[in-house]
Image (tube, rainbow, N blue to C red; front, side, top):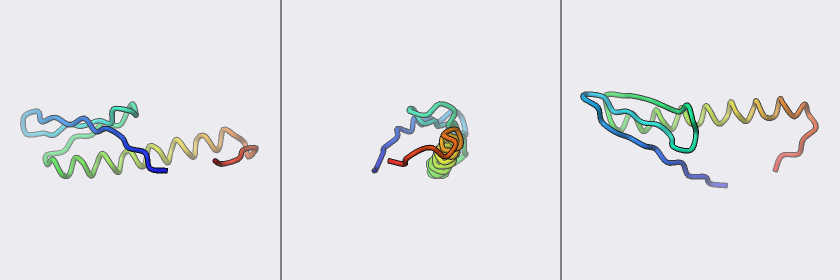
Length: 66
């Protein structure tokens, strides 16, 4: 499954600010535009993995992965 996410990016002074529209809490800032895109991708991946692990733990072993 290939899911696409929307990065909202803007420049404010010397900084590039960005966030992922579909996932609250994924916010980053960098001095370089390309570095911001990389940081957003890494942060999104980490958040999704954390949420996945949290969901599996909440299922207490009685689940079927789809």
